[in-house]
Amino acid sequence: MNLWGPGAFENEVGAAFAQEVTQDGAFALAEAFDVALDPDTDFLAAEEGWRTLAAAEVMAAVLTGDTSRLTDAGLRAWVAGADAAELAGLRDVAHAAVSRVIAGDSDLPDLWADAEDEAAWRAEVERVREVLG
Image (tube, rainbow, N blue to C red; front, top):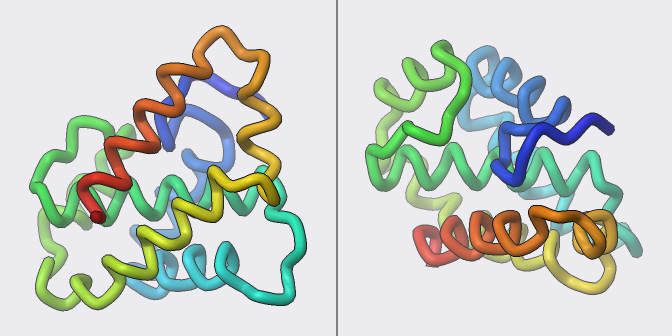
């Protein structure tokens, strides 16, 4: 997987997920969270972790109105038109999904463990968790 930076959309999976949201809207967000929280999944793969973090970043943008971390113009337009009240029901599940991504049964913490930007990545994840909080 090609990483460009610590942000949720600064990797190939996150960038591709932006297109999923512009096409499928809230369904794409809910699906990403559901996969992360699937009780039958013993270990969360990096790809699913990145999708979850990207979905959480979209939720944070909808809730705060801050689209500065969204790298895709189509996604920024989707967020601008999204109804925060309709997506509010996903807030708790989004928070739980992000918590799963940074837990011991997830691939992403291991991938970032030796990276130069690990602290920046963790700060981004914690910022999103606070918004969803």
